[in-house]
Structure formats: structure tokens, C-alpha cells
Amino acid sequence: MNGYEEHGERAYDVVVVGGGAAGLSGALTLGRARRSVLVIDAGQPRNAPAEGVHGLLGHEGTPPATLLANGRAEVRGYGGEIVDGTVVAAERRATGGFRVTLADGTAVRAERLLVTTGLVDELPAVPGVAELWGTDVLHCPYCHGWEVRDQAIGVLAGGPHAVRQALLWRQWSENITLFLHTGPEPGDEEYEQLAARGVAVVDGTVAALETAGGRLSGVRLADGPVIACRALVTAPYFAARADFLASLGLEPTGQEMAGHEIARRIEADATGATAVPGVWVAGNVADPLEKVAGAAASGVHAAAAINADLVAEETRRAVAARQSSFSSCSSFSAAQEREVCARVLGDRRHGL
Image 1 (tube, rainbow, N blue to C red):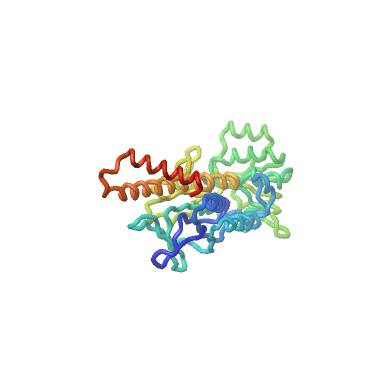
Image 2: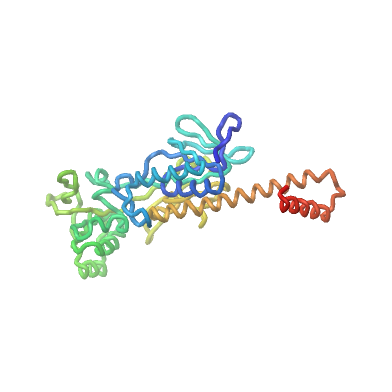
């Protein structure tokens, strides 16, 4: 179902902010529920540098751009609308619902909001890391481990989880090197674990990454040596893209792992509902560690919750309108109401 005009602005049941796997999955679900939906997409998919999407059943190895293009087509097939743009503000309307403003000055209205804007990977300030991010500089072994299996893999320490990362990536290669860089010194038990698994440990700060033919070839230390490396693993800080939600009272909160903050996200319940009524979140903006398959699933869950919420509100309004229509007939009894319902049901049975 398409949107409609309301006081000179387009209005929708739901505006989805973000057109990745979570946003498009949510929009698809809402379109199939016969809701008017608008997806606003800034066109900055986090996985754009990756060659393919992995772990998404039925779409293994599909290029991210292809997956999104197919998703957009499916959403439009159910009447959903998609526009390219960046949301800069959102405000609650006095009469209910929300008003969403884009960077170009246009505004749309929505009864509900589904925010799926994802996150920004804040990378270590090592020359070469940003340029090779998503191709040879990696984070998730389940997304990229198979593609670099049995090759020389380095792990760039920057926090207390580097040892865990090194041991995890050891599943994909016997040639793992942990560069301590700015990370903490491993404890005795951790050193024993690393030694038992054959993980090399290199002291010193990493100065830059070396490349050959545009691909990673080695890691250069500050004191000079270059250690051959085909892939480098690092743990970025995950920052939710959610600045525009501040005007609604939603601010990102820190997420910790083993006492170390690894991300900032928008808190929500299991359905994606936030502390602000009418606003749901899905995907990495809510769960920074979620993969593509999980992000898509969370979009579906949030969409189902939004539709149920709209159904409940529409039912309340219908009941109030019906009661109002009978308020002038104080003698209209419950028995007479049941008789009316029975007549309606009988008319339907006879095709009237």
C-alpha cells in the first residue's frame, strides 16, 4: 500500500530508516501485512567492501549490492516505497505519530518508526587499516574466515579480547600471529593457551600495513621489521548511527564485554521496541554483534510487533467510534448489540 497526502506531506503507517538487511526485511514484512511503508536509505551499507554475504541461507556468497537490490525490488513488489536520503531529525507530533526530516529539507509523517541505521566501525589508527577494511582487514571469522583459511593471519591487539580472537581464528589457520600493539600483556595462563595452540606473539607497536598489488602483504612494526601476513584481524569499536533519535529522547548506551566497552547501541526489548512508544530498532543499531542473517530476522520480528501494535490501536479507535455512535441511543442494550452482530454475520453468509 502506498502512502497518502496529509497537510502537504506524505504520510505512512511506518517509516523505516535504513535500507540494509534489517530495514528491507522489516519493510517486506510490513508490505505483506498491507501497511503503507517508506524506506529511507542513506546508501552507506557497512558491508559494502565485502565480496559476498556469508551465513545467509540461500544467498551464500551473494554480493552485498546484489542482495540489497533484490531486497528493494521485493519491497516495491508489495507496494513499499524507497527513497535515497539521510534522516537528520525526528519529532513526535502533537496529534500522534512522528514527523521525519531529511537532509534535503523534505519531511514525511509516520504512525510508527523502525530504525535500522546500523553502526560505524571505528578502526585503529594504523595506516592501511581503513583502506583494507572488509577485504584483507577483517573482524568476524564466521563472515570471512573461510576465505582466508590456511593463510598467514595476524591479530592486531587493541583491547583485552585479543587473545580470545587469536584462539578463535586458530580454527581457520595454523599460521596465526598475535601483534600485541597497544593491547595488554597476556597473563601466564593466556600465554600457555597461545603456546599450546601454536599462536606466535609479537611485541611492539604496529606502524603500518604493507601492500602488494593492492592487497595486504605484511605488518610493519615501529622498530622496522615486516612480518608477512595475508589477512589482519582487528576489533573495531562499534558506534550506533542514531544521532537523529536524540530529539526523541533516545541516546546510545554502552555495551560491555568482560568489563570493556566495545560498542554503543540503542537499547530495546526482544521485539525491538525502545523506551519511546512507537519507535522500534533492528539490526546492528540494536545489536552490534549481529550477523546479516540475524539482522534480517530482527527486522522481521520488529515489523510483526509494529503491525500488532497498529492493529491494537486501530481496534481501540474502532471500538471508541462505535461506542460513540451508540451514545445517543442510551436504550440500546447489549442484547440488541448482539442482534446487530448476528445480522451482520448472517448478511455475510448470504453474500450481502
